[in-house]
Length: 351
Ligand SMILES: [Fe+2]
Ligand SMILES: [Fe+2]
Image 1: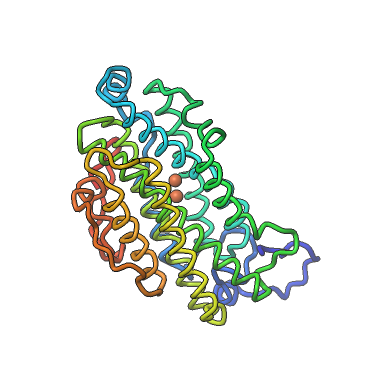
Image 2: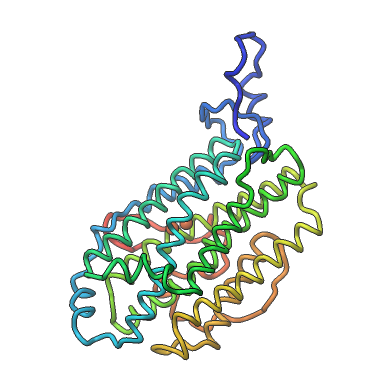
């Protein structure tokens, strides 16, 4: 947990800045709570923060006029509209949950100020995503009940939301303390759960929107998802680094039992996402089929497993190479900081 530096009286015998930084850790480090970042102990966290700043955007930059025309005309079939609304419903639910899980579960346990900086920005970006879904609903003229209300009418979405919520909030209890080894292991698991949310559970929705875009349908929505996906890529990178850094700092947490649990969680998440994706696309839509969807989600699951040092579970290939056109190749497993620099220009997606 974070600081209690100011609970006692002044003694004049406090740690020096250098000693404080030497004791800095992702969790369970020394932290005076004053966010004195320099010199950095975790420079990758500020690199990610800076990349986040370069990705500034707002929903009002996205043109939705064409989407509105298509939605109101007969250009989308009933099945296409249903797929669109289902994908949008879960994506918007998940971004809402992330605002709370990052601020209530993850951030309070972080003791590295530069990582807190990146997570605080991430929380803002999840709010930006929440806002952009509502801007989109208003601009396209969707019925909010069809998006936000879906989970109250749809059993599979209700139980997916419930399971997602419970998997993250199970460690929210008064006596939770990462200084206890079993709780620290649970925190590491919560970080993997976050990686699953951001690195797996958005991906059938992203795919659906890109596929509409590929068929010249709902182009504004596709563009907004590109902005969101670009943010999510950095969130995934942040959590991969957090998990790997905790493993380095506290190797006693990375037991065979914990590794097996993480592996199982990711493999189960791939199945959950596949089931959800199928409930969105039915027997298939605009070239997406349940078979190729399965390969795609499994391919992504393997990326997440190997990123945190676990073996691949599926060895599936990406069946949708066209998706690179929308994601700038970010699905390919690359070390972000060795990859192409994405230059930000306001209002564009050229990165
Ligand atoms: Fe998000
Ligand atoms: Fe995110």
